[in-house]
Structure formats: C-alpha cells, structure tokens
Amino acid sequence: MQSLKLDEDIRPLSEFRASVASFVRQINETRRPMVLTQHGRGVAVLVGIREFEAMRERLALFEDIAIAQAQVAAGQVVPHEEAKARVLEKLGA
Image 1: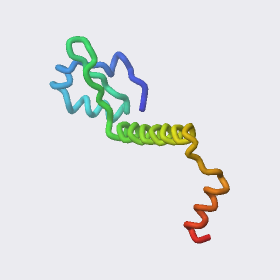
Image 2 (image 1 turned 30 degrees about the vertical axis):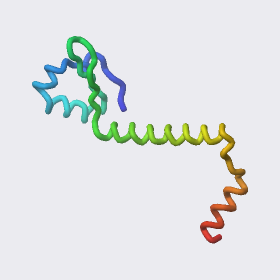
Image 3 (image 1 turned 90 degrees about the vertical axis):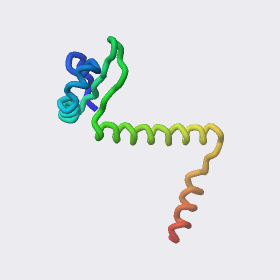
C-alpha cells in the first residue's frame, strides 16, 4: 500500500458522497488509502480491494506467528528430527 498524501487523501465525507466514483477511481489508481472526515475528525478509511486482501493476508501471517510464539513459550515444540520423521512417515517415504 502506498503512503498517504495528506493534501490529496484526506477528504470530507460530504465531498465523498458527491463524488463517489471519482474517489473510488483515485483509490484504485494511486493504491493509497483515503481518510474520510466528518466535522473535522477522521471517521473512515477507504482502501482498494487489492490492498485490503494484502492486509488480510499479512494479518493472518502475523496471527500464525503469534500462535507459534505462544506454543514455543508453552514448551509445545517438537525437535527437528522428530518433526522430519513424522512428515516423512506421513508421506510414505
């Protein structure tokens, strides 16, 4: 995802309502998020679908890493040679 450009990517919600198609086009072309404001405060962030999917994939990876770290901290580990033997056994090798 591209970095936010403060002068282009922060817009009032009322402007978004009036120009939805052009805002969506901008988000897809620039691959930058857009912050919508209401009464001068940020209320929503719009991102393109590709960026959203990439964010979801990264989040899933980080969640897997956190689970693995917790398992290691709890001593729920298997030595490398044992893990290798289990995999080879399941593969029938």
